[in-house]
Each structure stands twice: as C-alpha cells, then as structure tokens.
Length: 468
Image (cartoon, rainbow, N blue to C red; front, side):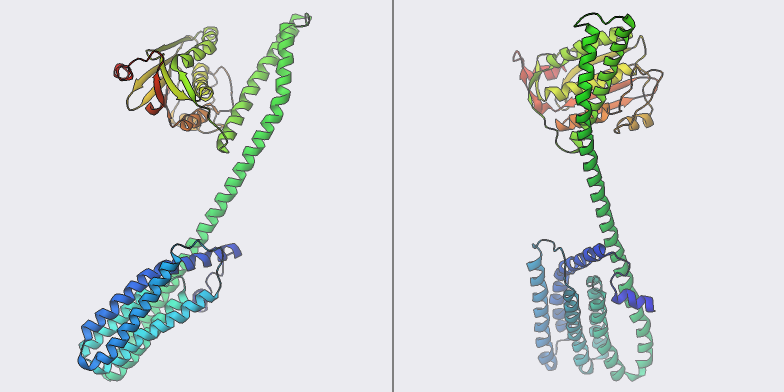
C-alpha cells in the first residue's frame, strides 16, 4: 500500500533528473492536448443530463448548473486553442500540477453537486441515471488526466462521494450493499490510474533514453567522420610523395637505379602506394557522404564518354587477367545530366568488383539501355563465383569485405558497393545488385529519365526509348 501511495503522489521515483524534466514536460503537453476532449465532454454531458431530468421544479437547479458546465467547457477548449501552436517548453513548474489538482477538485464538486441536489427530488430511476452519468464522466476524466494522477483521483473521488452519501441517505435499505460495492469500485479506479500513470512514465523514460542513445550515436558518427577525414588527409600527403618518388625511380628519370631487383621493388612500392591511396580515397568518400558534405557537380555528359573512360581503364587490365571484357550500347549519343566524376566512380567500383571476382577466362560486360520508366540503365555482368544472400548483404555494408580469396585479385576496404549505392542516390537513381552463388553477379545502375537531356546528334529520344 505504501508503494502504491508513493507511485500515486511521486510521479517518477526512478527517473533521472533529465528524464524527470522531460517527463514533466510531456505530462503538461498531454494534459494540454486532452483539454479539447474534456471541453467537449463538459459541453455535451450537462446538456444531456438537463434534457433527461428536465422538470419545472428543477429548472432553477439545472439551468445554472448547465451554464456553469458550458463555462468549464469554454475554459478547457480555450486553453487547448491557446496552447496548441506554442512551441514545446523546455521546462515546467510544479505549480501547473497543483493548479490541475485544484481545477479537477472544482470539476468534481460540479458533478457531485448535481447528484446531491437532484437525487432527493427525482424518481429512483432518474437517480440511478444521474449517478451513472456522473460516475461515467469521472472515469473518462480520470483517463484524460492520467498524466496528473493526483488530479485524476481527486476528480473521481469528489464526484463519487456525494452520490454515495445521497443514495445511502435517500435509500437506506440499499446503503450497506451500495457502500460494499463502492469500496472495490474505488480501488479499481485507483489501480487504473496508478497503472496507467506508471506505464506512461515508463514510456516517456524509454523515449528519453532512446533520444539520448540516438544523440550519442550521432555524435559518435560525426566524430568518426571528422577523424577519418583528418586522418585521410594526413595519410594522403606522405603517400603522394612515396608514390611520386617510386614512379620516378621506376622510370629511372635521373639515371639507372642499379640492380634490376631494385626496380622490381620500386614497382611494388608504387603499386602498394596506389592501392593504399585508393583505399584512403574510398574511406574519405564515404566519410564525406555520411557527414552530408558530398557535393555533386552536374553537367551534360554523353554516354559514349562514360563508356570510353571505362574501356580505357579496364581493357588492358582484363587482357592481363585473361578476362573477356566488352562494352555494348546503342545509346552512345545519349546525353545525361550527372556528376561525371561520381558516375564514373560508380562504374569503376562495379567493374573493379566484377574483375576481382571473375576467374581467368571469364567474361565481364558493360551494356547501356534506355526505358521510359527506368531511365538509363548501366548493366554490368560477370560470370564469376557470385555471392550467397548473406555475402551480398554483408557487401552492401561499409567495410563488409566478402573474402572470396580464391577468385579475388585484390583486397580493399569493402567500400565499393556502399559508396556506389550512395553516389547513385545523390543522383536520385538506384543501384541494384543481383547475385547467385556459382552463377555470377549482375549490377544495374539506374539514372532517372528526368536526367536525360538530349542526344548529341539530336536523335529522336522517343525512338531511342522504343528501341531500348
């Protein structure tokens, strides 16, 4: 019982100060929102009672009582209207809840008064009707004022006690039974208020906890992005020097190196430096995207230009690896409004993955098609080992390296697909990856039809789409 009393009068013994502050603010906001429902109830219910009990000898009681009810309704609806557009407060005063308790007591006196005044003057059936109406109103009010349990219980008990007293006095033959029923009824309503308020308190505490976790996660993500950006810059500066000097030594710009083995080692240094630089650039790209600082510089680019860059970059690599690489498109004259650098980066990432996971003698193809609904579609296929659904899901996550070591020709940070997905979304496009273990992988980059501007030779765009 002591714990129940503490729960009723102490609105959150287990809340931290910050949770308590947020909890009190949410209680006030909920009370303000509920004023509209309370005002409507105070407007309708007194009118219904007056219509049901109307008699000439009760007119002097019912009319003033009904008008007072309309005044209560006006005050509540006006309070809701005034507070509905106000910004959320950062803190509230405890006097608000004391004020709510006082107003609830006055409202309880209002409903208790109609019972005390009318029961001696009406029939037993009418007495039961007015008592049930008052009790029902008190239950609804207790639910609406649940954020302030003291006020809710005061409304209920002040409304109910006059009814019990008057019914016991008017009908003494049922007084004992009536009071015996009243005890569990009061206990039931009390428990309803306590449990509802406790659940409300736990809900707000969980919301505050989740908000704090989200804020901490956001701060950690921002700190990570700043750290990666700074470290990437610090690493790229010496790497550029290493790569530059290694290239000069490999080319023997200022004379022969000496032993040919040194030339081989310098080549390894240059290759490793370029590989590490590519990883750092990927990390920097994804950190910029996560920080929301990646900007796209759009321009009109011919599809043939994009295909030409890809062919130039990968034809020799494919030949060295024994992979048959082909590009095919009937839309080389098509012009798209995109960021050329980012679009080429997407295609490079996808082709690199395809090359890395395609064995000797395999095939990799890049085709372009055009559809009215899907827009421009760059499709990259390979007949490599492919991925299981679990591997594909891991590959979509940053740093989710797949690790197909027996077919892979290089390692990376596992950022190719995540970066490509995000670069595609910056253009309002999509990147779809479909892979089946043992049957290769197909990647489709979709550029929206709204980004198709024209064709270099002013070909009929509708005819091209029909052909696609």
